[in-house]
Image (cartoon, rainbow, N blue to C red; front, side, top):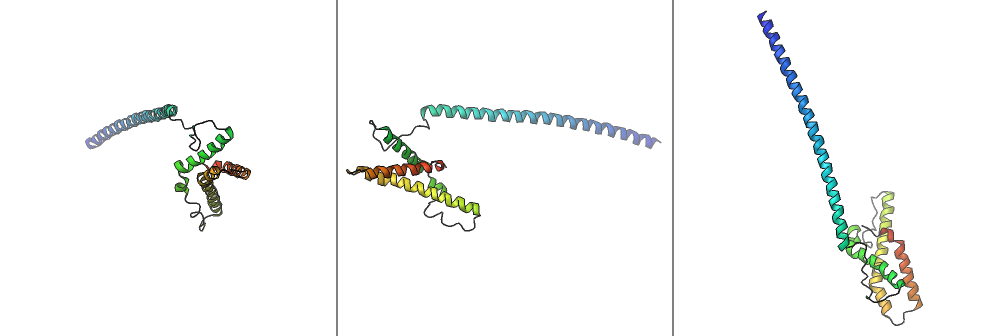
Length: 182
C-alpha cells in the first residue's frame, strides 16, 4: 500500500510537472508568435521605408539628371526647322539605344546568332526569327544614320529622292519603336 501511495504521489507530481511544462510551452509559443508578428511588422515597415526612400532619391536625382531629355548630337545649337529636329530626335533615340543599352550584347549579332533554330519549339523558332529581324533592322537603321545619312547630307546635290529615302527610313524606325528596350 505504501508503494502504491508512493506511486500515486509520484504520478501526481509528474502530472503537475507535465502540466507546468505544458503551460510553459504554450506560454513560450504565444510569446514566440507575438515576437514573430512584431518582426514581420518591423520588416514590412523597413521595406516600406526603403521603397519610399528610393522613390525620393529617384525624384531628387531626376531634377538634376532628367531621364526624359534627348540631347541631339547631330544638330548644331542654332535654329533648326521642326521637321529636321523631329528626324534627328528620333534617330538620336535609336543611337542612344544602340550605344547605351547595347542590344547586340544582350541579344547577339543579327547577322550571325539568329540563323540556327535547331532544337527550338515552334513558338521559340518564330520568336527567335522575329527577334533577329528587328535586331537586323535596328542595325541597318543605325548604320544608315551614322554612315550614309551624313554622306548624303554633305553632298551639294541633295535631291528630292534623298528626302524620300530619309522619310522611308524614318517610317522604318517608327515600325520597330516598340522593340527599343532591353
